[in-house]
Amino acid sequence: MRKLLSRTSSGATEPLAPSGLVPPVCGARKNVTTLSRTDAAHSACALTKRIRPFMPEDIPQVAELHKRVFPVNSLSLRELELHLRELFFENPWCDEDLSSLVYREDAGKIGGFYGVIPRRMRMNGRPIRVAVSTQFMVDPAVRNRLAAVELQSAFFAGPQDLSFTDGANEASRKIWEGLGGFTAFPYSVHWMRLLRPARYLVERGKEWGLPPLIEFALRPMSAGADFVAAHKRRSPFHQTEHSPEEDFSWETLLQQLPKFAPAKSLCPHYDEGSLCWLLEQANAKKSHGCLRKALVRNDRGQIAGWYMYYLKPNGTSQVLQLVATKNSIRRVLRQLFYYAWRSGSSAVSGRLDPEFVTEFSEERCLFNFNGPWMLVHSKRADLREAIQRGDAFLTRLEGEWWMRLQGG
Image 1 (cartoon, rainbow, N blue to C red):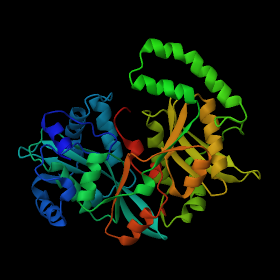
Image 2: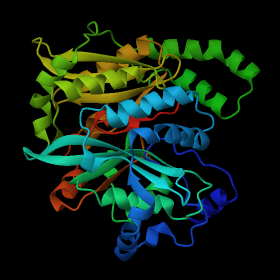
Image 3: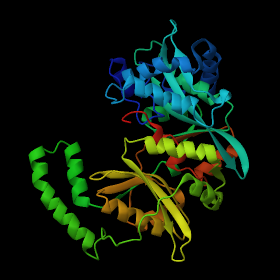
Image 4: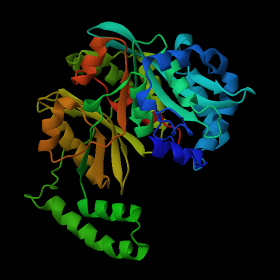
């Protein structure tokens, strides 16, 4: 952690994205991984002087803070202000008791922000209050070296039964664990299925500094290699044609979700307004590509599952939600892979549902155990245990991964 802290104290800003992340605490004398519960309680006692609920009149200052912390963000101040208002004041779960938080310095200037989105879920059929952490950011110029810890402590002190974020980096993970949270390893594994392996390697080469001339020369060869790989029957990258993709509406999703989610002890609870808002917001996000969604039917024409993903031609498409049963998961995956491949993607990636780890492996997916992390905090043992054993319906749609403001 000291290495992280010294980096920020030199004046450099480490981006917080993915959201739910916090920059290293500037020059902190205390390692946050060793903060005791007494430290957290002491920090919470002082919150009234520096931390208060986020209010609509704070939006311009928080948008400016976001610009300082993320200087490469392509969004204008006006666009950021609209996003902040939509996410935190116009979402269908708004709750005064579960508001976002701002950190104020002595002069009253906002130097930190902790976004909170209330959600509704059920544990064994009973309603619980959930708070999703997002857009956690602290200005490196803030003089209080434990501002991030104070914000996190204030969030944990809220009335929610369960808190989580699903896009956290190492710095944020240390703070959560130091204050009593934990890393949900079953939901922190990410999978990737290569569709055009040669093109994927060329694309990664660009990220690693491959000269443009060499990249241009490799394009025809990679295209030829991928064509052979996709059409040779014994190839692990062979693609077979599937039925046309069938789009669906939020009404269909609301009707079908109860048939799949109850297999888990912990699952989301949606109504017409919340699900419609959620899909509209997810569809408006363009940083990962264009959102596509499709039902998957079995041989009898019955709905066997569905998927939603951000299509990125000539890149890696990202899955937002993938729902299936043990009997239908491979059918759902194969249809997803085929249409992502046909639309030009070189790979598809997503967060693993631990129930299907064997099926993903059999479909030749690769696994990544290096984050971003799902972080969880709860005073209830039954909620902690359900998540730790993989008994929760928690897709990216239920988290904050897609809400990130940077890039669109």
